[in-house]
Image 1: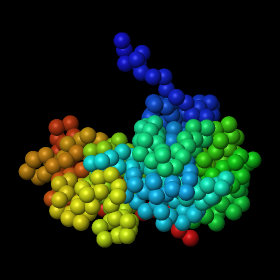
Image 2 (image 1 turned 180 degrees about the vertical axis):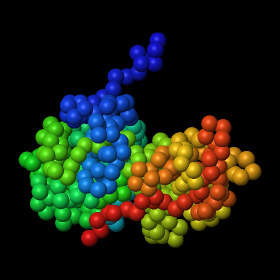
Image 3 (image 1 turned 30 degrees about the vertical axis):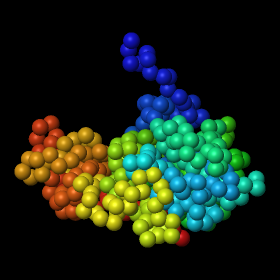
Image 4 (image 1 turned 30 degrees about the horizontal axis):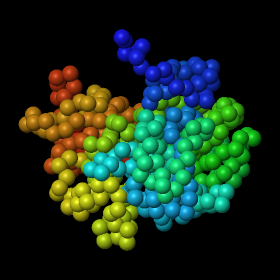
Amino acid sequence: MSSSASAAPLLTTPLNALHIALGARMVPFAGYSMPVQYPSGLMAEHHHTRTAAGLFDVSHMGQLKLVGADAAAAFETLIPVDVIDLPVGKQRYGLLLNDEGGIIDDLMFFNQGTVDGEPTLFVIVNGACKAGDIAHIQARIGQRCQVVPLPDQALLALQGPQAATALARLAPGVQQLVFMTGGDFTIAGCDCFVTRSGYTGEDGFEISVPAAQAEALARALLAQPEVKPVGLGARNSLRLEAGLCLYGNDIDTTTTPPEAALNWAIQKVRRTGGARAGGFPGADKVLAQIDQPARLTRKRVGLVALERVPVREHTELQDLQGQRIGEVTSGLLGPTVDQPIAMAYVSADHAAPGTRVNAIVRGKPVPMEVAPMPFTPPRYHRG
């Protein structure tokens, strides 16, 4: 039996017909048929997002709500992040961990305050992980709060320096939001929940909208002169330039937050000596790695190639004596920085910026240098 015959049929997002009408090249991604690029091509879409505004369909992502008075305290037992003190109207990045401190998924969560009389957290998880994530959350904290999946919600991302101009034309007041805040807006007659966030390094917005209204919203946004559709290809190059991890490539259940250079996501209150230190899966291991960095045997780093040779994921890295020291997890020619860039895990003694390593591409060494991330400066709107 062929793999294609045995594989489950691909799911589609509510914008599938629109993607096809716009001439998108569709590919399988996270179990969905998704647009990888439109006729203008990946490079043009990438540059348009950096200079104007790109519209992304991210409806494959999982959306859910955690409802009830105990929701924040319960959710805090699953992630090494401060949930309890997150103010109403604010969003935060989080990491769902297993009992060994490995990363089950990375996610965003938002304190919506009281909705229909109940304290409510809104959570967005990765598409390929959503069924497992929801089952994990339900099993661990479902007796302490309601875990409510939102399969009938689509998700759009509008990203770029002109995103606020375009969106404010349809939703006056949205420009008042700052990075990692949000609220309810009516946009082109559609009932939307909007956060000023995204995964490109640019200013922009993520918009949750009922699936039945998603195409009307997308068409209204695409009618704005600043906005063009952007596919998965440019989404990948944009997030890599921004130094942002792709789950399944750069982080997974075999990596801990300190190995992944994600200590910044763990607030002091959850660290050793904090008022609510530990109390999350794998806490002993994760906190020991934060407190004693010498325990780390490998680290996630940025790399820049010193020759114009793109270095792809799974490429072996060697030290200058030819010993294997790690592997590239994401890599491509960065359109904005105009040079080959990569993320990789390397042995801790090769993780310092400026360290020279060799990537083995088709049997030949390509010199690379450990570089700080992000590769392009972020332009989030912090007010």
